[in-house]
Image (cartoon, rainbow, N blue to C red; front, side, top):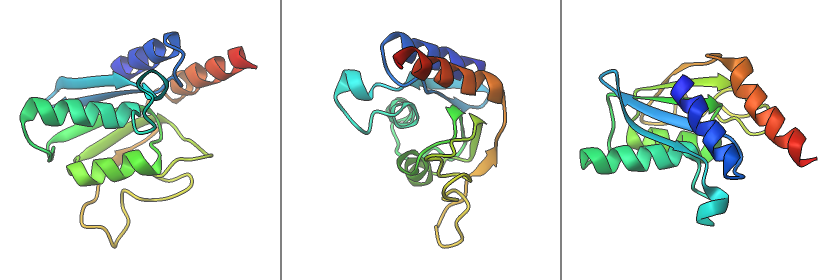
Length: 142
């Protein structure tokens, strides 16, 4: 999670919403990213999606069934959907997102009974640090 927080801080330095993601397979970081929606002019360039893309290219396959994705904030619906499509095994995230979280705050996508894949979720890992980076970013913009 600390590596994901580093990515969030780097995103903030670029003027992006500070969300960081790190994808781990066999206890090794294989992909890492921070949000790049503004810099890439791409609404899908969330940290989670970018990390999934990088890992898929590195492995040469679109399924990542042994992967754990660490993210600083509860993923949105798009990112949760991408995790389901990639067959990510586990998600670990820091802070809940009451305005858009698709894991438990607004939606429960990763364990929905009608979907063909479930993602194991661990929440609340370094939640204060994860929330603080976002709060400081938005406070500096007001």
